[in-house]
Length: 73
View (cartoon, rainbow, N blue to C red):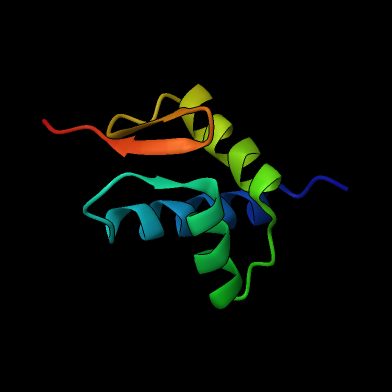
């Protein structure tokens, strides 16, 4: 069943991974990092979570076809 708290924890961890990067990274890279941190998500699931971030209007990042870029402000 859908657990909002678990989804939010995954989104926060994805944002942590992204904040540690200086270059754009893809879903494969993020999935690998998440696995290392105890979140066994595949690339497709990572793309789903990136889309959730995009729909929530994340102010510093946006997802485009599985690759995430950091917005320079």
